Length: 112
Length: 111
Image (cartoon, rainbow over all chains, first blue to last red; front, top):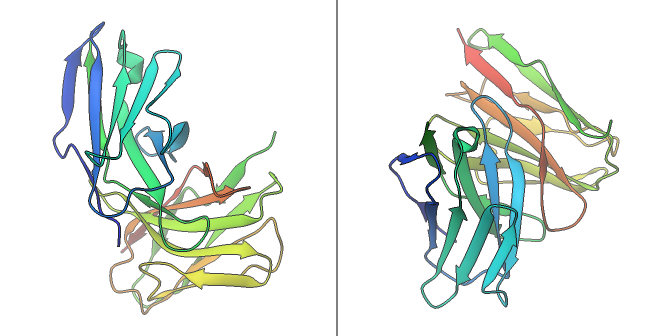
């Protein structure tokens, strides 16, 4: 089965800097990969999807890359703000149709 | 407003009791899912349903049961057979095999 590894340690960065979060997977390369944001005590919210034939995807201050050779996706938040503080989860399809496997998430704190 | 609702937000259960968590969506999505999240861990799939009257076990289905009698509703019952039910439970739905929409979650505590 697919295994997903995200930065196990929390990430603290200074406001205005770029945050970079890592998602590594161990087996087959998925057709796409997703990133979600989760605030404490709330459900995850979808942010971005990147397909295997796309090297990079952007949405406002967010950028996601997908390297099937390295079996890795990087999630960047530029000009970070304290409001970006949350846990970020990566997810990819697994098993039969419409199932997702989630990583354990990386907790990001942006310090003012 | 379209979305997914879960109730209750907090639920307390005595050992040996069955409890049912509610999940309703008005997004007209075919697929619905139940996940469990423990502190510092990712989401683990309990059950999922792609159409009405059909559902499949996920990775950790033991001690749980579901039903899908209506497209909008996918209730989860945590039975007394679930030995460690204290967790945060999340319901989600999707229209395609792409993004999933999550409810606000139910935090279950066993007393």
